[in-house]
Image (cartoon, rainbow, N blue to C red):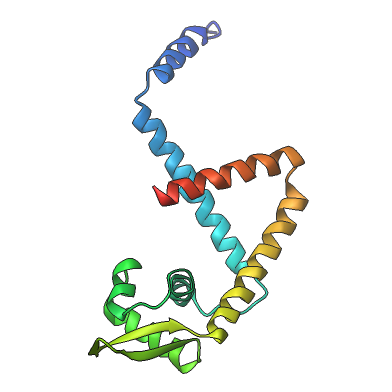
Amino acid sequence: MSAPTDFSKYRRMTSAIKQHAEPAGELTALAREVREGVGRLDWRMRAEADAPSPGAAALTVLSRLSRAGTHTPGELAETERMHPQSLTRILATLTSRGLVTRTADPSDGRRSLIDITAAGRAVLREYSMSREKWLAAAMDRSLSTTEQELLRMASQLLKRLAES
């Protein structure tokens, strides 16, 4: 029978390695954890929302128009990193549902301008409120007051990262 293995030397060695680990590697691991957590949370909020979703890409377009105002289709495709062909289909659907309008650009009649309608804002608001309602209930049910405060601070950090 062999003697029990002494792991203390191994623990000291791995501790020293961790202390001198490349910060970029640690940041990459943290970035992955944040991305996965945010992605899973977004998926869960979409699944739990009790308002009908116009679709992820359509929500992206409506959100952009709501925040930043009128865009040309080309500007939308570029800022949202969409293929123009995909955006054309999305805009056709949103236009037919009365959620966006398409008008001729007064300075260049060959271009069109896309804007969100009151109905589009209402759909976006209803869907957002549904997601926020579920999230607030989940935070109340699952997180302590201290954890809620930590999440409040983390949300500010996430906003800063998004704007950097």
